[in-house]
Image (tube, rainbow, N blue to C red; front, side):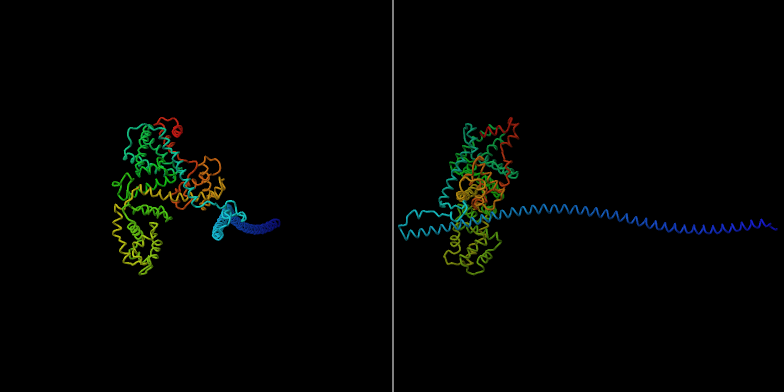
Length: 595
């Protein structure tokens, strides 16, 4: 079918438009494809940037954590640095204190050396005077008597040389000790209580009742001392404690004072009859004896009493013991106790051992007994002991053998040990010792038999009295030394002078110990005035200062006593039992009874 021209044009026009639309479609498809590629590219780029951002954020968080950790570490380092600075400051302060103490000690040693030079110079100068007296009889007496003038040497005032002789100081010490004893007796708390509350009695207490009462009281006193010292409180003296013990024991003061009224005359009666147990108790209680025992020494003796009782119980001697002498113990057991207590002081050990020799044992047998004890302690046989003491020589010289015995075995029993040793092992004075003779004398079988022999038994009274006798010897020497130091330091000392004088007596004293000693010296004179010679000597000897012989008799725990925690047994008892005694205020009863 034929088409008209107009229709053909329309068809052509339509075809051209269709082609145009196809081209546009193709272009649109191409454009869409391009946009899709761009979109995918942008999406990939966005995903990449997003992942990178996540990584960066993660890194930032880790960085923040690291920063926080570093800050914490820096804070800890700053704390450690501050602590180190504080410790450094403390160390510098301690170092400065040490340097000051070192300088003070150097000056002290310099003064001591200077004093020594002056003393020897004075000594030789006096010898020159004596020589001049022999050569020229007409030398004026004023030249002989003139003292050495140390002013030109530019020495401090505390280096003044005392012109008193050693005998003068000993006499002054004996006078001081006698006055101290008199003061203790005059201020006896027990006698004051007895005189104030004594009641008439029809008969005295029996010796067994006296022993039982005193023994029970002393057992309780030991426990009370231990509790006081552990609690940093100063124990009371035994006389004061006995009054409080009786009140506590009976619960009624009337009965307590009735017992006290029976006990005191009984002690006086047996003390006059020279009963050793009663004499010892009177010394502890500060009654009826011219040599009362100080507080610190009383604490020591109370402790030694318990130590002795333990040895007596372990030896099984409690039932057969002589109670009028406080019980018995084998001396072999006392050797160990003495060695432990006086380990560092052979001189004191020797003095105690020589006085403890049993009455029915001669010196030679007792010396051999102690020598066997020393050999057994060294786990030696007689042959081994001879080889050790002879330096493996067949016939060692007596003097060398004895010297080795003293050094190797720490052998020292009597002051004349040398003579006793020679009389046993070298009786013919040949100058040497044979092995056969030595071994024949060292009889272990006899030694072990004597260890449990009643002849080698010591009573408690003898043991404690021996300790007191030895202490008194060295106490006199200590007081003599302290009086000499006091005189060289001046008269009526202030705190600085007191501490310097105390350091001369015991250079190892610390600053705190010096302050405590000064406070105690002040308290002895009612906290008033400068320190007198009496307070100086008493305050130092109470702590075992003045002579090395009294050091082991001191009570180290007394250094730990707090001034605010003074023990008052009366108050503790009355506070606990005020209700049973119908007391309104315990302190009123204390003051009333003490006044």
